[in-house]
Amino acid sequence: MFPATETHIPSATRSLMPIIPRPELVFMRGEGAYLFDQTGRRYLDWVQGWAVNCLGHSPAAVVQALCEQASTLINPSPAFFNAPAMALASLLTQHSCFDHVFFASSGAEANEGAIKLARKWGQLHKGGAFEIITFENGFHGRTLATMSASGKPGWDRLFAPQVPGFPKARFNDLDSVQALIGPQTVAIMLEPTQGEAGVIPAALDFMQGLRRLCDAHGLLLIVDEVQTGCGRMGTLFAYKQYGVEPDIMTLGKGLGGGVPISALLAKEACSCFVPGDQGGTYCGNPLMCAAGVAVLRSLLAEGFLDATRSVGALLADGLMRLSKEFGLGEVRGHGLLLALELGSDIAPQLVEKARAHGLLLNAPRAHCLRFMPALNTAQDEVVQGLDLLRQVLRETSEAVEDAPAA
Ligand SMILES: *Cc1c(COP(=O)(O)O)cnc(C)c1O
Image (cartoon, rainbow, N blue to C red; front, side):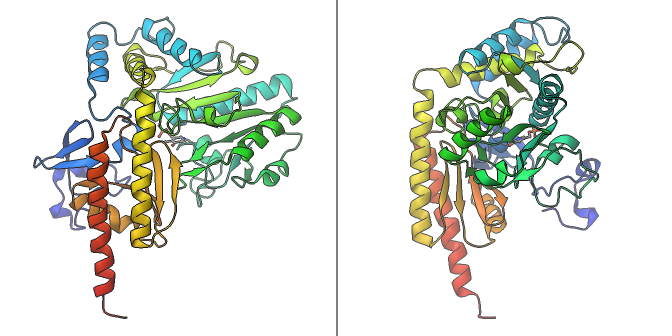
């Protein structure tokens, strides 16, 4: 952290709103699995822009797509068709169970679209039903509606009053969902794996039970795959691991490989927006869509996701060995969205120590670490990161042993 005395803060940082505590570093360059700071020091990056850079930093495919598209056509306006938007939409519909796509710029915006679509469908087909059952500890974004849909502790009072219509059930507890279904219910919305909550996967029978509940009550099943989508869990979309088809899905983060693009996908039966219902100045602009096409083509290349799954298994295995060695908790997650439970609130301290060792980690909760390397990270990079993490854990446990008894 920057020292509290203002005189020590480089003057340029004073112009930025302090929305998050930032370390005293300025990152100047990124390359694949690595970031480089203002002194030229190299860091192995297991945050990757919060699971955004699925192909690593400045991947050639995305750089080339952006450069070519930038010199061809950046933005004709959403009121005209453009080739990259059509190409990306057809790639997404070809490789999913969905028929229609709306592009936006952030995950929150895609989720706002999903909420609006479900409410519109409720007006047309369910007598104005508008409630969307969401989950405790869920995360759907930082707009007012998506904060209201989120179940992050304390968010019900922050910026009150909330947008109404988001009763909260308990994750992986089907009875708690069933108990909330009433005449005003129109949809159930969840993350297939709760990311910000600390990588909590939905159980197979829970997801399948939600599909059955939706079918029995005529509700829409909405999956927020902003974090879990685009190969992050080892399959193109996480829902594919559950043998169910949702009605609506949202994507973000990995979709642009680092640049802001998100998507709302719907099956034709519930794709009920008519002109005037939805839009946005930047929606479907060719520059971001060209990046999305480059990302999707990379993810769909022969063997890409197989490699992601095996490097993910290597990381999970290494984390389990570290957990055993240092008496820590469980390892959760699939593919390259993994978490290590620590058993005590030492995650922020580990994040700082790891950074000092040249490894960037993320702590979604004080008691766990979340790992989201680039999906194309090499096996030796994973081995290197695990070695660094072992050093950090060893120092931390030695520090605890050396501490005088209070
Ligand atoms: C990050 C995230 C969002 C919000 O995406 P933004 O691009 O930050 O608006 C929504 N849902 C989930 C599951 C996320 O992980």
